[in-house]
Length: 71
Image 1: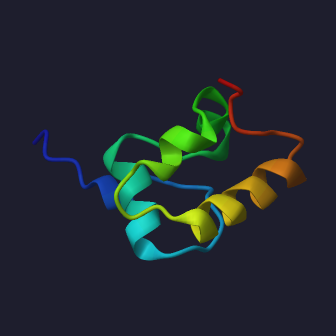
Image 2 (image 1 turned 90 degrees about the vertical axis):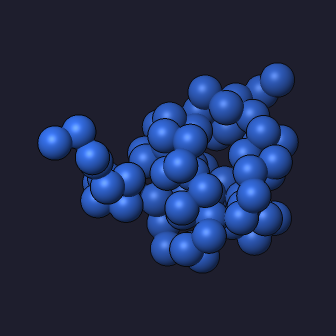
């Protein structure tokens, strides 16, 4: 079967709201490293992702020496 449950994909995102986690998964983001290829402003445009989730993601990225893409 090709019916893949997007929520079963392994994610290394920090603990944040389920709407934000779902929004990221729905567009194919499951790993912090993937977020280095997208601008913070683009993530904020996703329905379910707000300033708090972006702040949490920024902190997690910074801990790994990473950041959102600069565009």
